[in-house]
Length: 282
Image 1 (cartoon, one colour):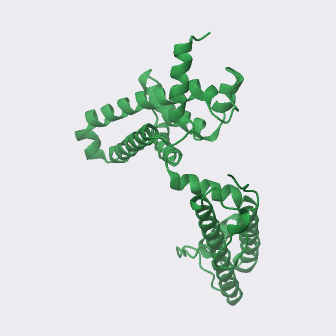
Image 2 (cartoon, rainbow, N blue to C red; image 1 turned 180 degrees about the horizontal axis):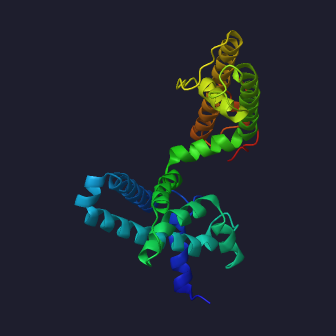
Image 3 (tube, rainbow, N blue to C red; image 1 turned 180 degrees about the vertical axis):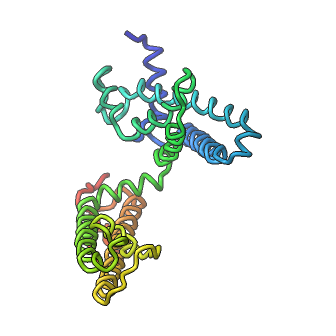
């Protein structure tokens, strides 16, 4: 059992890690410091891949990695320890609550990002693939950014529409790849050798990248390529438009005073209601 002093310390520390806690000055300073450390560490990992820099500044890179690893490991352990005091109440149980927290997206990212360096501390094999996993620390930046938080909210709100667009996009890639294989397979057997290979052509065409490694030469193939290009432009434009509208609406809702009624939360362009569930407060 913890005494009152330890419980009080844990509760105070939880304010730094809890996303639902008020954004006090201490929380903002902590997030900025941690984000700065992540950026410095990621830059060091990138520069370390340059051979002459790795040889010349190996001690500096090692020092940065060791310091960052110690801090990130301490951060991870403190997040797990203080999870029982989070305001949402999901992790109240001292054992199962912490285990549930550790299964979350960001805790898993935190663990995978520090695991290669921790294995290196104990003499474990630090393979190149495991070393590159340290770049996952960049994802940790989304936890400390209001902009990324806003983007995640938009993605959650528009999840169904986004899933429908992704389904249409996958359907387009599959059908167009199969058709192109039927049309160009006999003419260019080494290029359009299979449906999966033809789907790579479809991806290049839909995204308008056009590397030029796979080009239809028949009339029917070129017609199909033009149709797929037009469908791809429309689908991607619809996707970006959906995200943009959702982002603007969510940003407007967050900037609107909480005392306003739902009837006052309308789109300035179409007059539509943006949200239905906000209650009026006194």
